[in-house]
Length: 62
Figure 1 (cartoon, one colour):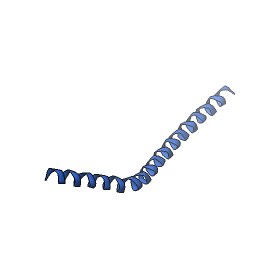
Figure 2 (cartoon, one colour):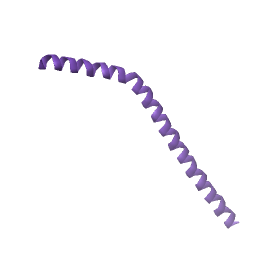
Figure 3 (cartoon, helix red, strand yellow):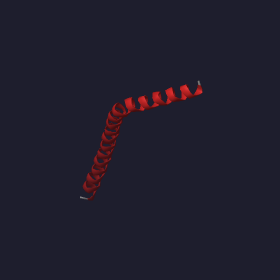
Figure 4 (cartoon, helix red, strand yellow):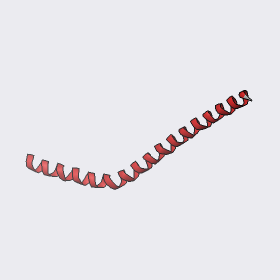
């Protein structure tokens, strides 16, 4: 009886650990996905601002 309980507890611990790995994996995928969307939206704006700043700086330096 006790040995069966120990085995089931060990199995539960393994399952729990694999679920945690799965959650971490999905969380990383989610972060990458959000980051890609964010980059798609932000990068054109960021490039415009940078090019505008470079243009202003170059004009003043000339």
